[in-house]
Amino acid sequence: MNVSLSRTWEEYVRSEVATGEYGNASEVVRDALRMLREHQEMRAMEEMRVAFAHTDPHGGQGEPSAAERELISQLVRQHRKRKPAA
Image (cartoon, rainbow, N blue to C red):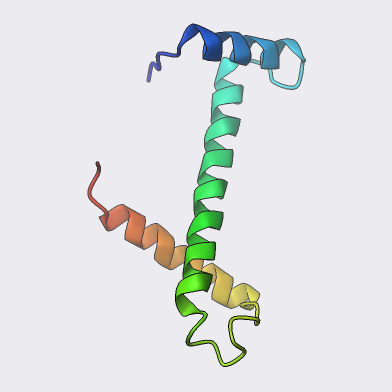
C-alpha cells in the first residue's frame, strides 16, 4: 500500500524517525494508526456510557467490569464491520 502525505506530514514522519524512536516511516504510520483506533474505541465507549447512563442502576456512576468492557469492545468492532464505508 502506498500513501501520499502532504509535505508537512512527510517532514513530521521524517523527524519522528530521526529521533530514533522509530526505525522507519512505516513504524510511525502504524503507531499513528494504532493510536487512532484506540482513540475511536475510547470515544465509542464514552458514547455508550452516556447512552446507557439512564439505565444504569447506579445513575451512570458504575464502571463496567473487565468482561463487560471486552463485550462492549467486541460489539463496537462488530458494528464497525457492518457499517457502510463513507
